[in-house]
Image (cartoon, rainbow, N blue to C red; front, side, top):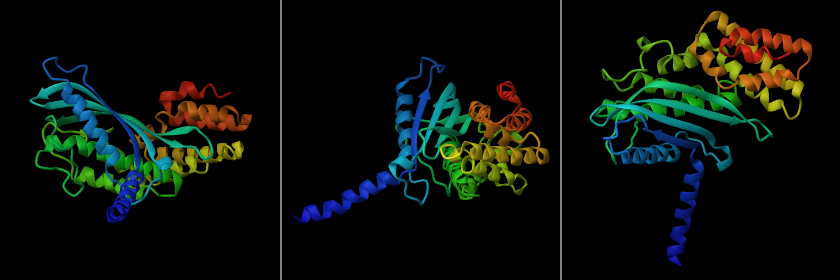
Length: 305
C-alpha cells in the first residue's frame, strides 16, 4: 500500500513532464553524400539523440497540452565529412501553426540554413547549456546551438501569432545564443559579416526596433486574419490585407530585409487562395502589394484575378 502511495505522485509527475514538452518535432539525418568509408550507423544514432533532444527538453516555463504542441520538422542533410568526425551539413527547418476552428495548418517557418558544421562521435552526449553555449568544444556545441536557436525562433513566431509581441522572450533567447555562439574558423552563420541571410540577420530583424512592424504583421496575419476564416471570410481577408500593409511600410523603411523573405516562405499559395475568393477591388489591392513584397512568387499572385 505504501509503495502505491509513493508511486502515484511519481506517475503524475512523469505524465505532467510528458505533457509539458512544447514541440512535436520530427528530425531526420540524411548522409547519402558522405563517403562510404564512414559507418552510417553513427547517423542513425545521431538522429535518435537529436530527436530526443528536441522533444524531451523543456524549452519554456509553460505547460503544453498534447494538442497544443508545435508541429515542426528538421532535416539535417550532411554534405561531407570535412575532418575526423566533423561534418558539413544543411539544415531545413519547417514549423506550422493551426488555424482556429479548422484542420488547416499555416506555415510559420520554412527555411534552409546551409552553414552547419559540427563534430559528432557516436554516443557522445547531445547537450545544450543556454548559459554556456560555446561548450568545451565549439564544433561539438555548434549543432545543438543551431537547433536551440531555431527552436526559440519557432516558439517566438508561434507566440507572436497569438498575442501582440508575444514572442519577444524567445527572440531574446535566440539573440543570446547568437551573442554566445560557438567560435571557430570552421563555424559560420552567427556573425554580421557572414552575409545578409544568416542566423544573425534573422534574429536582428526580430529584435531590432527598426523592424517593429514585423510583429504587428505576424499577429495581424494569423490572429486577426487566418483565425477568422471559419466565422467571417471577408474579415479574414481584411486582416491579411492589413498585415500586407504593415509589411509594405516595413519594406520601404528596411528594403530587402531577411525577415521579409522568411515571412513569405511557404505562404504564397495560401495567400493567393485566400484572396482569389475576394471582391474585385480587394483582389487588385492584394495583388499589387504582393507582387512587390514577394517577387519570388509574383507569378503565383498574378493568378489572383
